[in-house]
Length: 176
Image (cartoon, rainbow, N blue to C red; front, side):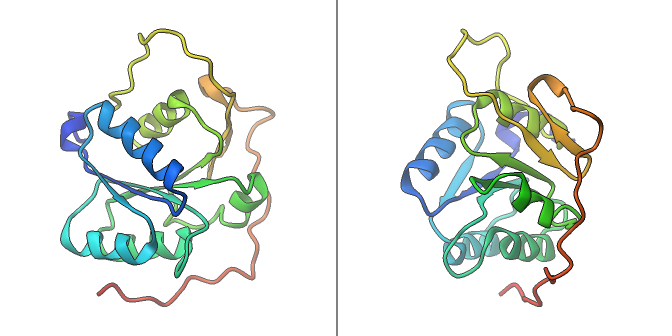
């Protein structure tokens, strides 16, 4: 386990400038060394130059989607944790529920608490303080291979994993 947030390198990938700026700023504010990429090509270039402990990527990206990017980063750095952000809802996550390249999901909109839950669940250092002043937040759910996790660790009715879409095939992509 990485003991301190400043030892946990984070790559944020999103083609929406506001999402990229916001998520990058959150990680930076809490002391994580963070890099940002606005598309999968830039992300692959950064992955080739630097090892990251965590990649937080949007699912819908130009050139290669978040799953294809996850496959590429896992080829280059198998220990990198991959979290996919999506506005597509639980059905999109369910299609990829058996994919070992994706470690966790964040559903937009999400808050710092959801980010903290995911970072903690992945065994990475969590610098997001629980003793921060109360903030107005939007309730969020996080979908993982183990089920639907609500804020505070609540899992309604046990695992909520629908069957994986069998039409989704692992891309045969090589890392440059």
